[in-house]
Image (cartoon, rainbow, N blue to C red; front, side, top):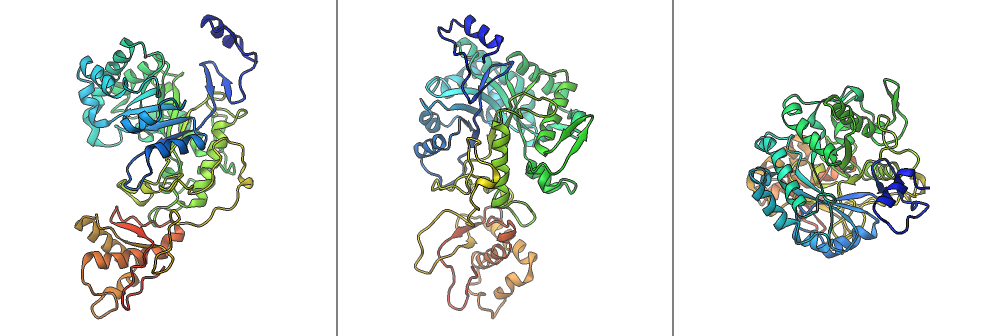
Length: 474
């Protein structure tokens, strides 16, 4: 049944007919009616991704209700028109200083990037930057965050849109100086008073969310005292904090942010999880990055987020936390460690990397076993079936040589065949030698989560690179 507040809102908004019962996928909270649907991060750092139209069709077919973009991509915003999907658009980090410089700059940005698509595209949030506090590279934007936020808000208000389109930013957990125990969470001293205090004041005044990127996987890989089960919602570990019991790392990390905001004077701050997920592969030292673990994490994440009986966290029970999975695709042009290119739910041909029910109906045991796959299905080559990891034609010489040295240093057996007089010495080029070393490394470590990455110097192929007596393993 609708609460008294819900009935009151219906009357005050002059709704002609107020349903006596909320739909099954809606929870009535103290803030508003919020539909229980998952969100997805749609990134485009890949040179093999499907068309925007096909991608949007896939997003809807998967039953996502929200889409988060890392820039105001005009093609994507156009394709999202009249889909009913809630859209979060990011103002890129590089534009924050300019937009924060004047009201005119804010108006110009909204005119160019929002006005042509709204309201056909259901834009609900504009994020002013993404993880600007993570790198010194963007330190110049810190003092511009609040002015840019105010200027965008003024532009929206002048058009009568500020009631529907909220403004926020996305932060990583490195905004915290203290995160354990969760109740002791505090923000970093260099940003707490000067930047976050006025920004969180704006968020609470406008009833917006702070978007927090929460990655239990990353914490698990660097913390020897975090168990895999605790990071993956297995409910086999309990951590007690002042009478609150935590059975998973994600709740503890979110509550640390709640505690930090409370300590700063904002006990009612609303939080959305802007990014979370689990990679299917990574470098050899990134243990836990497997298809099975990624499938378990995201399946259990969906069950948690869409639950109507266990809503919120130990510190904020009953509070809905909108959540966006990272990410839709494996993006092969993303820089960094191997896992960076392996967070996707879909291959570029739109086939699933693993099955996940985005409606939250299936339990762990109801899924079929994950198939073992290194990529999307491909036609058998004339040289036979299989996959090999070889040097990329687009790799720069320095990255290629660094990757070659890394593979050879990992195991001297990988490069024995490259020595003078051996079967794979000729042609004596860095690219040829790197292909042999990359493939030797990947074939040995792939089952442990090793990826074909080498900082972007490597790529997978279904064409056997063997030649003469130099036979590449597969």
